[in-house]
Length: 405
Ligand code: TTP
Ligand code: MG
Ligand code: MG
Image 1 (spheres, helix red, strand yellow):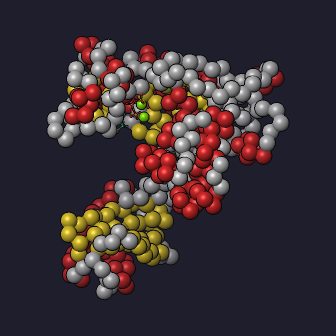
Image 2: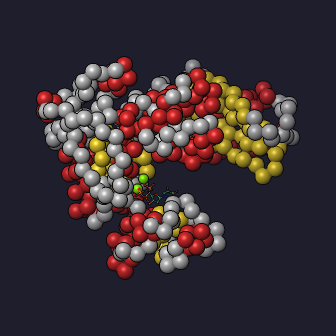
Image 3: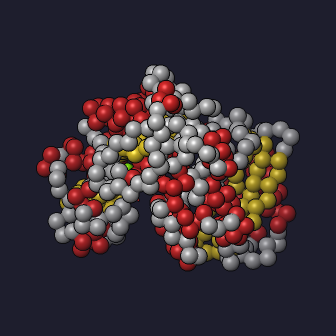
C-alpha cells in the first residue's frame, strides 16, 4: 500500500536521531515522505509501509486511582499489594522519581520511597476505561489490535474519517481520551508496529513521537535492546553477555548468529534491528489452538497415573473447546520430562474431531505410543489446532504464543 500523503512534496527534513528527555511531551509533525536515495534496506521497509499508531495509557492503574481519589494526585502511588510478598503492578510517575517500577517487590518499593501510598487494584474500573478507549480507537479504524488493557496498535493507513495524517489522528485520539476518561495516553506513530510501540514509549507521559519512513534504522540503532518489544529483561541479559547492548550492536550480527542464539526469534530481531517489521495489525486475532497443560508437584511415570492425568486434561480442555465454540482437526500431546526435555506428538484427522470421546481416544493413543516412558514427566498438555476459521500462516515468534490458554 503506497503511503503518499498530501505533504509529499514538502521539503524533506534531515533525519535526526532523537534522544529526547522522556519527561517532556514532544510533538513531531510527520512529513511521511520517503527519503531520497533509498538503500536496499529502505526498499525492504517500503514494502511493509503502513501507517501505524500505538497508544498506551500513562501509569495506567495508578493514574486511574489518582483520578478517582484527588488526595492521591501529585503523590507517589503504587497499585498492588503492600504486604510481605506483594509486588507493584503500577507506579505513578511521582513514585517513579524514587525508582519505583512495575513488577518490583513492594517491600523494596517502600524502602526506595517510604511515603509510597499503596492502593489495591480495581480491575472492573480498569476494564471499563479499556472499553472506553477501544471505542474511541474504533471510530478511526476497524484495524485495532489490543495488546493489553491499556494499549493497542491501530492501522490507520485508510482511516475511517478520511483524516489522512496518522499524526493528526494520534493527537485527536489523545485529546479525546483525556476528555472522555480524564486520563493521559502517549502515542507513537510510525510505519510498522515495532517502531510505533518504541515511539509511544519515547516521550511518556502525555507524549507523542513520530518515526517517519527512512528514520527507523537510525532511531533503533541508539536504543538499548531491552526497549525492544519481546526482548524482556532476560533476553536483554543474554544479549549483554553476547556483547549486544544497542540496536546497532544487534544490527552488526548476522542472521546465522542470531539463529544460533535466539532460535525462531532471530528473524524478528534481525528485522527489528533495521527498523523493519512485517507483522500486520490484526483485529480480533483468530485463535489458532485451544489447549491446556498440567505441571505436577511430583514427576510421574506409572502408566495408570499417566492415563488418569490424560483423562483430567481431556475434561478441562474439551470444556474450553466447547466454550470457544470451535472445532479442529489436529490433536497435539506435549510431555516434559524430569530433565526438562520437551516433546510433542501430533495427529491430524481428515475431519474435525467429532466429540469428547474421539478427542480423548486420540490423546490416549498418542500417549500409549510413547509408553513405556524413558523417564518420569513433570508436565502433560493437550491441544486442539487446525481450527475452523483458523489461519494457516505462521505468526512471528513472541506474538504467536496463543496456545494453551
Ligand atoms: P504498562 O503500560 O506497561 O505500564 P503503565 O501504564 O503503568 O506505565 P507507562 O506509563 O510506562 O505505560 O502497563 C499497564 C498496566 O498493566 C499497569 O498500569 C499495571 C499493569 N501491569 C501489571 O500489573 N504488571 C506489570 O508488570 C506491568 C508492566 C503492568
Ligand atoms: Mg501504560
Ligand atoms: Mg501498556
